[in-house]
Image (cartoon, rainbow, N blue to C red; front, side, top):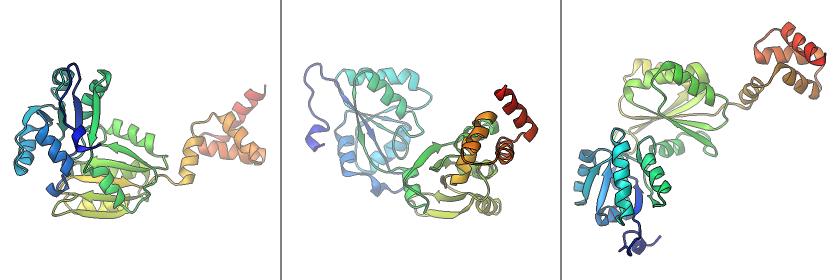
Length: 293
């Protein structure tokens, strides 16, 4: 896209464009030249925290009008912003840091705009999750962004059980006052030996990466006070773990037949089925017998 096509005069009846604009996650020099120009040229900026965004704009001598758009007013403010766009005005949406739409209400505004047939365009830039991933030393070919875990222990465990067997590298966000509890939950469900990397205060003065097993990280932060915002990058499950988890989703007779097809003797296939499913060999035998009948 050329500069001329970003903020341009609209013909009668033409709708505006919603720009999703990345802002620095720490270092102000990570602001892109294109994003700065569009922020200057736009008529209105929708900000998650107008006070925070005003500081950014002041630093770059930008005086565009701000309006508040956040998690608590998105249901009422969203339709107002869509009406603004439909009337032919462009709008820039920003979050407090990083890409809007990642763990913030920017995704809701994008969905509303798309449903209304309004053009949505990215102004790319800093992102904490990907920045931590590429410096983690873990596999970057496939990854799953999980973000912040739910607040209750029950829902946390449900989410972690869901991703436990994935071979993808896992990316989590966490605040310092929850880090110890989250590391403990990760170690309990994913395993203490699972390798991980913590990115702290990314792009800021005290940026730090800590790498090791989840058990080692739990021990470190039991003795050290967590400070700053964290991205937790966790290695994917080993192939054997993924196969075991897949087996656990099969019925006993189906899994038994699977092992027979692999050439295992009946007794060994029955033993392995019982082990994978956590049931007795007698129960497997009874299920197989009932199936044969």
